[in-house]
Image (cartoon, rainbow over the protein chains, first blue to last red):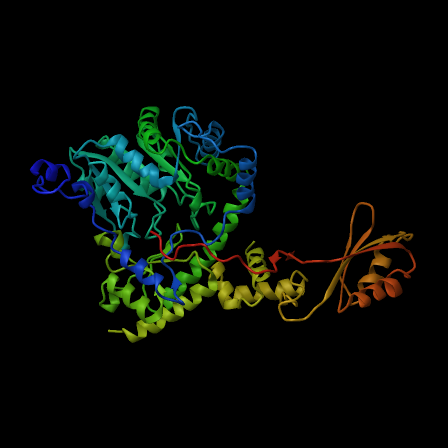
Length: 402
Length: 161
C-alpha cells in the first residue's frame, strides 16, 4: 500500500524546492509591468512610452523579404549568418567608420542587439566578473550581466554632464574583478550622445585596466546636429571592443529581429558557440531584408532621421514650455525631462499622468536609480499626438504645481 | 537648404504654422516667415490645398486618363496645343510624355457622359490633335503620394523599453 502511494506520488515528499531558479528569482520584475497591464484596459491613451519607430519598414525592404521567400529562402543559414550580409556589414562599417572587420571570422549576425548583449556577456564573463554600465541604462543590461553570472556595476550619469559618463567615474569604480564596460550611446533612455573626446576618456580607462568595451550602437544613425563616433574606431580600441549594431531603429525594422556583433575572432567564435546552440541562426528572411537595407536603404534612413529631428525639436521645446526642464537630447528618439519640480517620484508621476490625462510615459526609475526624477518621452509618434500629449501634460502640471 | 526643409514640411502639411516651422527647423520665426514669402514669390510654393477623397464624402466623380496624339507646330512645338487643353478646368493635369503618344491628360467630371462629351466636343476637335484614347479610372489607390484608403492601422505595442 505504502509502495503504491509512493508510486502514485502521494505521501512523504522530498523537501520542496522553488520552481524557479535562484538566478532568475534574483532578477527584479520589471517596474513598469503594471503600466502595460493598466494601459491595455484604457481607451484614448496617447503613448509616449514606446521604444520603436512609428514608421513601418521601407517597402522595398519588405518586398525584398517577400521575394526571398518566393525564391525558397526558408532554411537555416550559416550559424554566423549569410556571408553576403556579413560582407555587406563589413563594407558598411568600413565606409562609414573606417573599420576593417573580416566578414568570415569577426562578424556574427544576431537576432538583434538584444541577443548580442546576451551573447557578449555569456562569452566573456566568469562568475563574479564585474561589468560597469553608465546609468540610467537600457533595461536589458543588468539582467543580461546577472544571467551570465556577472556583477552589474552601475555608474550614475547626471543631467549636468548631459548624461555622458565621466571617465573619472569609471576609473573610480574599476577593480581587479572588472571585466568590461557596457554602454549604449546614443542612449536609451536619456537621448545622450558621447562625442569623440568623451569616448577617448573611456578608452583610456579601458586600456589602463585591460577592459573589454561592449558598445551598443543600435541608435548610431539617429544622431542630430553632430556625427556619431563608433567606439571601435578610436586608436587601439577595435581589439577591445564588442560592437553591437542592428537594423531595428535605423531602418524601422524592430519586428524582424536582426542585428550584428563585431569583435576579434576569438570573441566572435565564443559568441557564435552560444548562438549556435541557443538560436542557431537569425531568421533567413530577416537577413535577406537586412541585406536590402544595407545595399539601398541609406536614403530612407536619412529621411526618417530628418523627420525624427523635427519632432525632437517640437517635443523638447514643448516640454520646456509647459515647465519641465529638459536637457537637449542629441540622439535616439527620447526626451528625458526632469519632473523633480513636482515633488512626485517618477513612478507616481507616470501613474497619475496615465490615470488623470491618459498620457503614457516611462518613469526614469525603470532605468536605474539615477533615472529617478525623470520621465522618458518617446517622440517617435505623430506631431498631432505629440501636441495633444504636451497639452495634456501641461494641464496635469498646472494641477500638480507645488 | 533650410528653405528646402521648410518646403518638405509644408508639402506634407500645409497648415504648419511659421512658429511651428521655426521650432521644427531650429530657425527663427521671422526667418521661417521670410523663407515662405520668398518661396511664394518665386512660385516654388504654387498654392496650399487639401487632398479630398470625394468618394468618402459621398460624392461620385468620374476620372479618366486620356492619351493625346498631337502634331507639333513650327516654333512652338507642343506648347500651343498643350495650353489650349490645360486651359480647360476639366483637365486636372496635363503632361508631355515620351512614348507612343504626346500628352497625358487627366480629366475629372461628374458623370461618364460629361467626360466623354468633353473629350469628343472640346478636346478632340482642337487643331493639331490627331487622336485620343480614353481610359476611365476604375479605382484610385494612391494619388500624389497619398494612399486614399488612409493609413494602415498601427501594429505597435503602446509600451516598450
